[in-house]
Length: 343
Image (cartoon, rainbow, N blue to C red):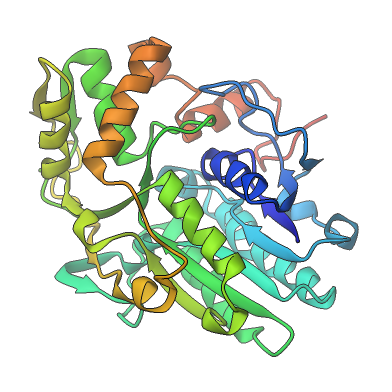
């Protein structure tokens, strides 16, 4: 099977590509390359047919010979989503619909969409399920809701999307991100000796290791398609719901000599949600068996940061903070304000 992965040179894509190649899949990568030069570890997948292109410029030719699509490409977090709301609409929503229309027109039935648990927004103390009301509070989350709704309207016997609502991802990857909460907490602890909490630490977040998330995508490729046809799945584990302060205390236990510091810059962060993951285990348990938890992931991160010699300047710079890198490319006039490459 030839699987097209959009955003294959991003944080998740750099791991997912390896997972699929190791499993014997052919992979076609589709990535605009905003983060070239931002690698944490060098990597190369020579077996991948790589298409260097903006997702907004996808054509039928790019999907020739493709059997399934995994769509990761997006402005990938809340700060990026707020960078320019029009661009979030264009890239995260309109380009998603266009890609799906092309795929459907070419008879590609399996379409796995990278959604997010952030679309639950302000959900309180009760664990939300896939049937809970959606309450997105950011442009990024709104784009995920709109995309799910649009793809659902396209469903028929020839087009079978599945929506993987990922928890907040953590763990080491060649294209590391340090703007994700677990990676960020360990980064502050390692580079400064202080774990910076910008809220009051009470918000809940579901979390998932990047390897476990990749296994969920693999499960959706390998299970009978009727098991996941037009289904949304929260991806994570019930035990992996944490309050921010609890994650900080785990990091404090792992990194010697560090302290927790509350800056309260964001006050009491309104984005709080606990998530139920019962459905994915009930439906896909024979295919999806996660192996990580936050403590194990933090130990992996701490060791990798030490081996790399991560500095504070590098940690808070452009390489691992997505919004910083895009702003730098705009300032350098390497890309336009519409985020198209100038050359």
